Length: 165
Image (tube, rainbow, N blue to C red; front, side):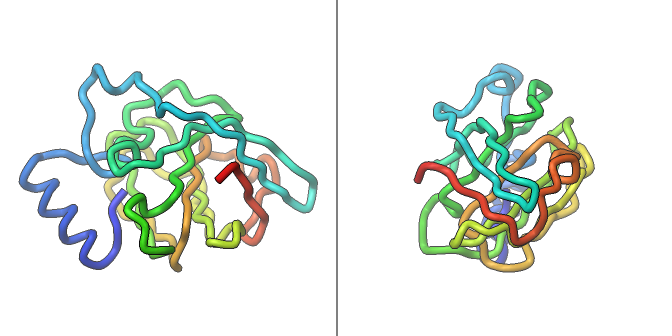
């Protein structure tokens, strides 16, 4: 994950200097690729059709958010990753930009406002792409799901998302 503004410049310099990159920034070794975030939390999305609960990994720290779902091929239909708080260093909501480098599985990326509503859904993102995927507005969290799940479950922008804070 890279941030807009100064964050992008700093991240770009760091990536150029270290050669690291990925779905959420930084890189991973093959050994790290199979590891998951330490905490798993239920995330409930309320749509016009009802509620759906996902059990997702929570990336809270900068290191966890940089690793994201890079190299992962073990995602389940009701799994994913929640980047919360975003950004991990605090300071309140800000625009986000993700990419799919080193990510072999298509994802739906849901950008979440501070009030818990979905600001934007980037559906079926292209695996391994380095094209930035912007939030379009300041967000407080980001939820990544297996590509296509949003459409399958009728999840739309404006729907409500909740999780234990």
